[in-house]
Length: 144
Image 1 (cartoon, rainbow, N blue to C red):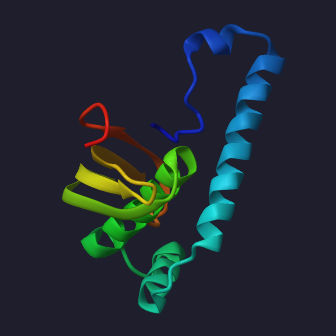
Image 2 (image 1 turned 180 degrees about the vertical axis):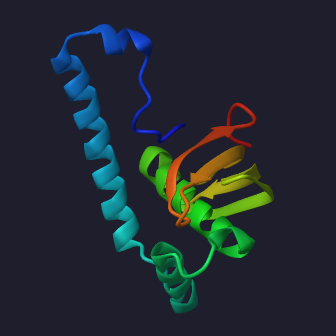
């Protein structure tokens, strides 16, 4: 699944302005809903929250802090998984590599209702260390 709100086909661009406005509106609503979920699940790690504040103000670079980037990516991937597939019991992001401002790798998820899936993930960060785009996909079909 991808959570890029600007993701739509070239065909949609050629449609009437109202179709484009509806697509943009749906994307904005989706982002607003995700932000509400993320705000309610704010980090309980005060040190991490302090780093986020420092990175947002430009006092420090988030790209020298892999722990921060992995934690932010895991938080957003977890929120999307929970929203799209149900409560997440555990999420493991392993083999994470940073290429420019994009963190990607492999991992696995265990759902509270049962089932485990292997996945790949990618989180694109802006200069301040905030995620603006990303995706995940399951590596194998079905639950094991």
